[in-house]
Image 1 (cartoon, one colour):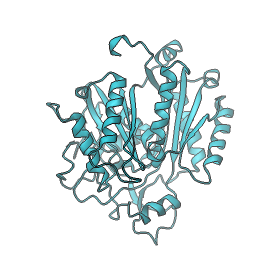
Image 2 (image 1 turned 90 degrees about the vertical axis):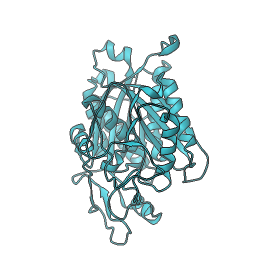
Image 3 (image 1 turned 60 degrees about the horizontal axis):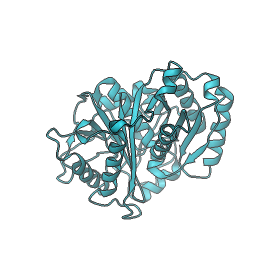
Image 4 (image 1 turned 180 degrees about the vertical axis):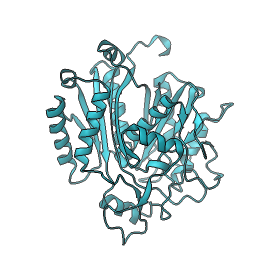
Length: 370
């Protein structure tokens, strides 16, 4: 960090994912780099009375609690956590708030305690689409302050009938079955399965036990615009402030960002507001910042979206390729950005930023490097 700040930076040492693209990181990375959407007809439950009928579903998905336990195990294995180390690892869990939230959390806590000796779930986050990024920010703050050496963060959402019905009734789902972030002709978002987990720890703790970091979580920021219960402020003020907070905490300037994984869902109102924020932050650069929204491929995983998208961003940086903004039809004058269209691009050295926004005007930004 500049200015002689010697606080420990946060290493990502473990990562596990499940999406409609498949189990594990490889099928997810391949899909986002190819710009190959995972959307199809909903067969998990009856949608015959709905306006929309598509989502991104993993065909053989089991219960949410079972998938969460396995993904956490995948992250623990990648981080090389033995039972003794896992027993000293706190866990934060982001879930959709419904009648099953407490049950799912209890099942996950019991299973990871039995299998890995971990402490169980210390806190549950249900703050809509920034739930898991808020958990990441809190985990980083715990580590950077020295209060914890290591924190695991997990999140999960599997598309189910109640939330599908709510979004459909609100005419938020794309009836044409395609998510088209930032594109002219976009008609709304599409939901998608998302289960993810990461192990975060101080660089010193990782080094001491010989763990190889996957990436570095350099900065995080959050801000609210308090503009409307579900509409973003048109000038993107809240997201702008969240991005600058994350950059400031990372000690990184806008010119050092080589990729933005945008929140953009295909919303008529939210996409232009996000574009406005991005142009406020990065508009003075000589070279425009490349942007895509990987929701165009894996769908919107609600409370788990931010963690899945952080994983995608890390995987893309490590692969040296930037994901495609799929579903694009034509430029929207209100969303003028350097969008990654048709094919992935090489990723130059530098940092990436992953953005998320939620109802109520909540906005988060996470800065990562590899």
